[in-house]
Image 1: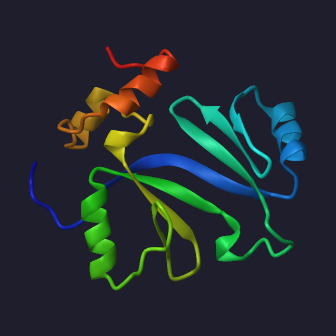
Image 2 (image 1 turned 90 degrees about the vertical axis):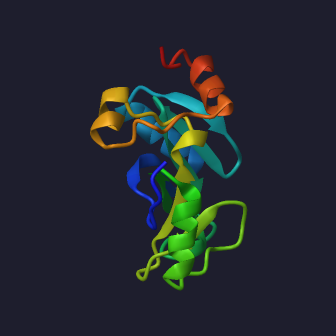
Length: 153
């Protein structure tokens, strides 16, 4: 793999929306779209969109604009560790927790996700055209895709 100093953004893993009530949100989106509910928790629901997903999260308070409210997007990169180093080199402190999350200057929360470890998949010809044909999925990501009947040939 070529040495580089910045990770390349290659797609979205998910988008997280803040809602006032999970059941009302599922009813609303269910009236508009056919979807598969991946998981339902007391404070969140996850709607499958093929190899991507929409996360609906209950607002922790009436202040929907707070950066800690869960609103974020998952940005898929070719190399998560390179992204981590670039974030640190820019003087940005990652947020506490198990993920590589940070706030942009306007308070938007961004979660960095490595391509290898997730279901989100670019077609081989797209990866080739992006110069990323070397990217391969982990066994765990391939298992998740296979369980949905979406494993690559």
